Length: 480
View: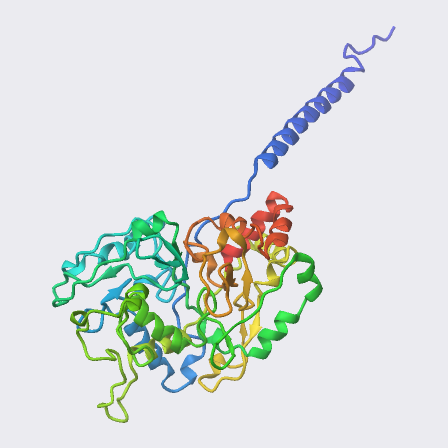
């Protein structure tokens, strides 16, 4: 009799069944952990984009315009000069150098921070308040790792120190020259910031980046208005309106500053020189008292230490070597300053950035932060002429609601209205929103929603995205 094999015919089947069971168990565990990880994933700001920084460079092809590169270099040098009282600093000031406020990630940018880049050093305002013997006290809202800030008061005070009903809105400089070795007998005092803070009467502004400012200046009014009228149904459905701020004299669209209050880079430069550093110039020729000091009769004669304007065109120079004053050269430097180049790979990779760019459009972000506006013909340089400015702004002012309202009216921009902030270079920004209240890009987005804000519908769309979609959008923004 033939004996059957000792090995059971069922064993191979049982072995396969065991393998299937183990595979199924492992798959279930993998799916469980994947689901758990997905459930725990929360979109987050990837942070300031590092790597190579091309910000602070002149416009491409600038060298094709004779003399333009020299103007850029000269303007950049002046932008970084440190002012003394003899050169016009004060009597009231926020800083002593343009570049101290506009330095992140390069000259022309926004506020630096020691907490993010320790090698940059602390907030420069913490280093100049007592420079050269000045007797200033550092206000509580100026900290070493915080943003550079200017302060505005919403209302004037009464004679008893309480709030009046008269709007103020002007810049109250942080520091005075009193006590400095170069200040003579000038003896004026800082504003009583602690008292105004207790009355909730202070609003803040941080420096706006000026990259690509010449392109913004050269976008025609017709282009801005046509873009305002575009996508009307989509804007209406999301509650977006917006309107231009206009110059009070010629009625034309103004476009620089947090409320688009300045029409041109010349005015923007001259005003900043006078308001932020106290330097009189050919556009703003008078020594500046504080707004409340001006109402009481003006500045003490002992604080008017120089003939005015302190910055002026060098009329004694020869025809070939004559150069305009600092304010004009500041404007030319900003006019010829290129916008930063966006990254295609960082952060998150090419696929995430591309997806985020599309989501930026579908959620409605692009309805205000218009990706591209074309410049008009330029008489200054071909580098400004009929090129695409990828600024991500419509240059209009919008109602941003009660949460962001600063209580200040400038021109046609009311106390809760702000210009759509250009986003080129936002990947390397440290502080966000007009007052620098956050360094978290995700938080800055969420701060756009509050009672009355035109962004409420867009933020609702953003919050309905999946965590990964929100991350892709954040990666896209940080790639800019």
